[in-house]
Image (cartoon, rainbow, N blue to C red):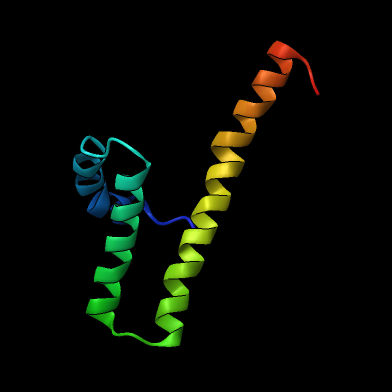
Length: 84
């Protein structure tokens, strides 16, 4: 996953924090991800490259979520409950 500089993170974090307190379920989170991508495409233009960029970003964010959040959680549960 491409990491961005601290100053660029600051440009997004306030808006993300405000959004995060509003999302209550999977459907709403899916809606937000879709809408953000749609707004970006509306701004930069629809092309295969731009559409692919959004799809790729979603896929890589999913992989990063698994690597940093879900996998360690599963490892902890294996320690607590034993492996299958």
